[in-house]
Length: 162
Figure (tube, rainbow, N blue to C red):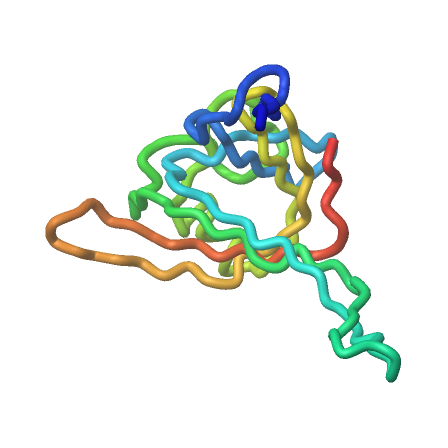
């Protein structure tokens, strides 16, 4: 028996470090700024299915139907006063991290139920565009850690896998 190398050109994996979620401005022209203080992120793409089993087989058969962007979660190292950063307006500079605060940043995007365009940029510069709103903004005040939020974004519509 011989073995075949099935590693893709360019390596067998890509470190998650350097993946950044950016938020688009609410106005025009639309400009993206990185969201500051984000840690671990998870995205659960899903597909619904229909049962197509017929009488001629003992095994269940299915087909994929509706796709669902589902939920995108991210840990936010929360700073209640915003800790600096870009406020939400139409003059983003495309460089300054977007503030996590409730007064003028990501918290206000949540309280105002804003459906926004986001882009997820991976370390190899692959970019996905996702339309989402923030559905959960829970705060954790564990005395042995920094202030954390485990944000939940609800994806709306079809992502663009650019």
